[in-house]
Length: 139
Image 1 (cartoon, rainbow, N blue to C red):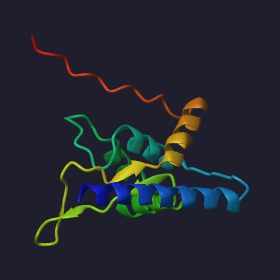
Image 2: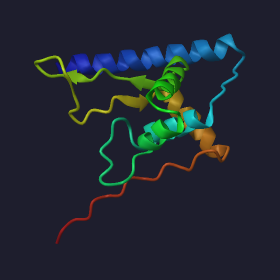
Image 3: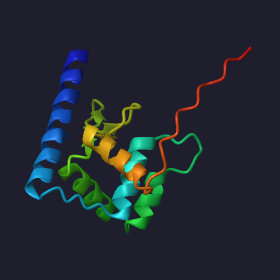
């Protein structure tokens, strides 16, 4: 079972790479991203989706409001998928067929998405990714 999930992950990364390559080669490398798309890439990089922000405000909630609701949000995410910058994993389903969240990130950056984020950091459009804080050992 675990091997099939690893194979699925590799296949999705290969698909994202193919989409990014096709996008870049078809238009002489013109990668246009809206401010909201850049914010979504940052949210995927720093938080994943969905997240449990530990009491912190979620950038996904802000994006939903700034993009005029769910319809625009999903169109924006589809644009990032078409460009091969993010990978969307299917949610797990319970025995009744309802979606469940078990801690798995449903939207993550592809390798191309990570590289684009690095370029956006260099351009000053995104802050550098902050290293995760290590939990302090109790003495």
